Image (tube, rainbow, N blue to C red; front, side):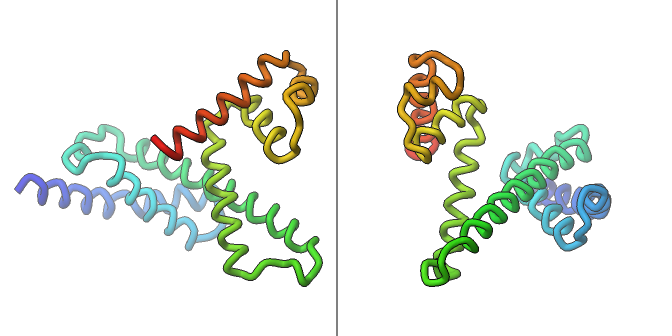
Length: 170
């Protein structure tokens, strides 16, 4: 009985706030379809984050919904930036080396996952990790580029590896 009461509350919240949330999103983006998608994803994430019986305890539902929607919108823009960079890279390849659409999709998904993994790192740690992994720089070269000691550069890289390991295996 209590679960059905909470389901009714979610339904009521969606009916009351979804149109408002779409309007809020439309002030930030031009696409009604994207606003509707993000609104849907916002409520889906709300349900996943909160236990069903806790949703009714949200004191400021609009503030809570806009916080979630803002994060989803940031994810969308970050993904578009990654997609644009990938398309620019792919367009510069010789025609015969351009991956199939399926492989391009996998590459884009992988790049997005990597971006999400690295998002939790401090900027200097992320930069040190990328310099080591993508540019193949040594700890000494990274230290020089970041204007930090060798020990700090090595600590940054180790922290990034621990962070990625924890996300993958814990």
